[in-house]
Image (cartoon, rainbow, N blue to C red):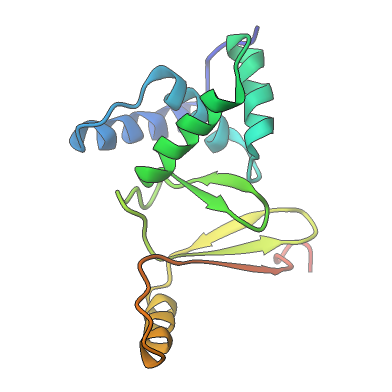
Length: 153
């Protein structure tokens, strides 16, 4: 089995995530920390079954509900986003870490799979204003746009 070690950058982000959880009176358990670390270490969005396989390499036998429960906790606490289009997860510890989410937009490169997260409040306000015009109140929104990144263009 592989070691639990992550890069220094990821370890620092995990420590930040643990502090954010502590401030909210919730616990970033060892398993949750490991799942978040695997997501943060990945260069691309990571699916639940990929996480499960990587977790098995590190911890031994693990069942899918184990990963799904950890992912749900991480989502509820604003530490990861789920990209519906890709059915995969990306970390959200560096700049954000909001308890109940935040306006997020994702640019997904259809060639290399790189995902860039934006937090454009003007775009979020424009969406909320458009919804309001038709009598709809948005409680949360994630925008996913597909195209080509600068490197793949």
